[in-house]
Image 1 (cartoon, helix red, strand yellow):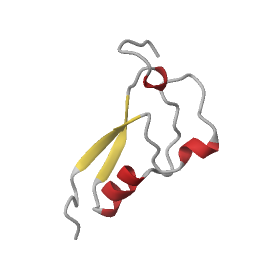
Image 2 (tube, rainbow, N blue to C red):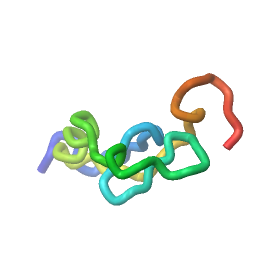
Image 3 (cartoon, rainbow, N blue to C red):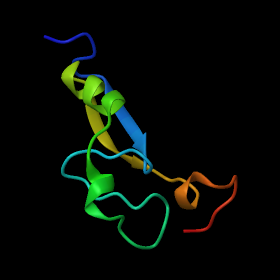
Length: 68
């Protein structure tokens, strides 16, 4: 049992999740060094939160509007 067990979460495409490609809002996949989970995502998955997928983001998070 974990404190977030069974609670679904979604991650912006700026955050890496093991087994899921990361694009950062760009048309091309980011290089492998960017695909390592960070401490926040690791903590969420250790607490047994269930990542359901990625959400849209502007290219590399640089703006407020984007079309991709």
